[in-house]
Length: 439
Ligand SMILES: [Zn+2]
Image (tube, rainbow, N blue to C red):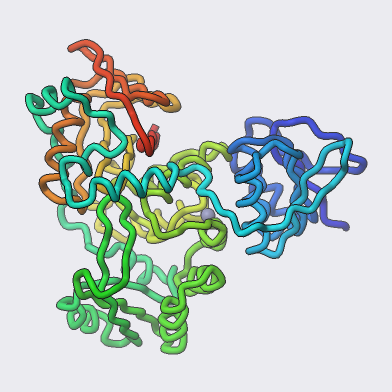
């Protein structure tokens, strides 16, 4: 039997032959089912995020020809898609009835579709560097009135810690047999303890000082930063050595090979490899959220990366069945009491700004970009500096205290509660995305 042509998206299309069509509103499971039929071509019928991410997922899963409607994506998104196609040896075409098919070649131009504008973001972060007060409000237009309100406000309380969770949940995944190689970044002082824990295994060590940029979680390898060790642990020495070698080279091709050695789901590794920019952890959260919405994927609590990274990789969507299964095996490997505390903590919606600023809601109901009702909000503890965290907690405390309804609008965050309506304007780089986990 010849492999089929699939049609992805809600738009209209006229095709000469037979094709399998994505049922409307069926969500990610239906897209996965179509991709599992090993199609010879995918015809995407719409533009915007739904069209872009459908085309991308087809490319990542090895569909050899992907066709998008001419003009529907815009030049820069189309250029990024062409780079993705080149990464996976796929052919990308634009099509309309008047002009037929045109092959789209990569230009090397990349954009982070679904993420805040990286230039505006880098500019704001650079502008606030070394200034905790400004770093704490990147993306928020804090005028004099807000300044005064923040001064008076109770800082948003910090979320409760879950007692007794192991520092590296990846170690459970390794014990579960989900990872041929376990990769840990530890402080130089911790190396001996890790070696003792894995006395029977091969441990390959690479030293690299690492400095972590606070708002993005970006790791900068260089001379500055705290001394740390990168450990590659495996029952198979050759695999540990290969992982260490691939890691040191850091190329797109290696992302796929490394992901396989780490035991990450192939769909998630492929989605990660497709990206032009992979170093900004905060950007990855936005991209995954946008992609999840575009593909109709649920936000599964086990993948609530803002509360706790149960899986060490970036899932291809927050509804990825393979990533969820991976996470659930980790949760099952925890003592029951810890697991249930973690599951409760994960099943809460989050307003995510960046790696240093996120808010989790309790007693909340979510509808799209709106929390229709919440009782309490907590600041998620992060790696940010204490001064930065305190200022962020004051500003967010002034906005969110007391519960109510939160609307994440394009130009402002607005809270309507018992104490009236409060509104804070957003500014470049427009940080803030609702992650409706547990809703
Ligand atoms: Zn996946």
